[in-house]
Image (tube, rainbow, N blue to C red; front, side, top):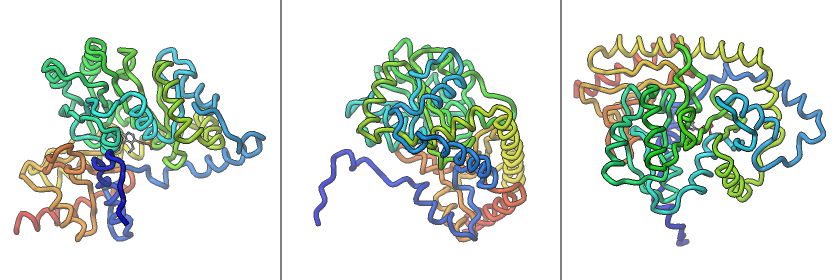
Length: 389
Ligand code: PMP
């Protein structure tokens, strides 16, 4: 059968991370590859109670508004900084859908967009499907190099939007400094682009909250966030917060995408997010657990690899980033690592046009400190086989 697909399909590649999940699903493999909450720390019981409660209401299984259950939009608006009204919020099927809908609303084919590099692959997937021209700006331990963005703009580039993961970057682990946030917002005002502040990890901080969102500095910022990392990915509850006009346009394309989200799940999320004492206790508990794991992974990596690597200490989120200063090719390291029953995501998975061959993303959330140590021992064994051969 000859299959002729739309032109935009030519730019799409299967996500290297999704493909890796088949390897990491093997029970004997210790995975540092995912980006998932620990199933043990997902509040199953509390979610079950909430589902039971919501099922008692007559509209639990009915369609809801395209922009999402009004009560949930109110909760999200109240959790965002500044004065936010419910019609400045759209609830989406995870924040990934918010990215995809925003691309439909804002980007004509061929429009330029800027992403940080190494990049969040889910954003690349969206921008490629939108047939965008993807430009990159590097990232260091202080987040996006906004000086390099300014240079790009000064050279005449006019992106429609700039995507940033401002807090606990996926994959780089970095958090943008307050000064760079203000700089980015100033550039958005001056050059008239949108900032998509993609922030699913901001509440998962281990050494105190990150700086104020980029959105506090400018109205040209659309914020995206999610319940996936703090409650459960399977709820598929994410949201965007932006100017009314943008939300209204997103609502129009969302009508075509899915009519509406799940009113059952929106009400469940509303119940969880409005139960302040429970939520505070839950967040405190997961921050303590993940924070201890982040420290354990960092110490194990430094202990095993020493000067051969530079490790970003994760102050939040789910990821550390390892840069192999000894020139190790992390694609080759992954092959050796899988033989020794450990997996991670090589830097090449986050490259826009090749590169990051010496980097690795390591996730610390799904393993205990003791298991992380074993995983790093296995990784070091794999590393030794490459150095010897
Ligand atoms: N943005 C970033 C930076 C992410 O890392 C993720 C999840 N991997 C998402 C968005 C999407 O998350 P969700 O759709 O579950 O909210």
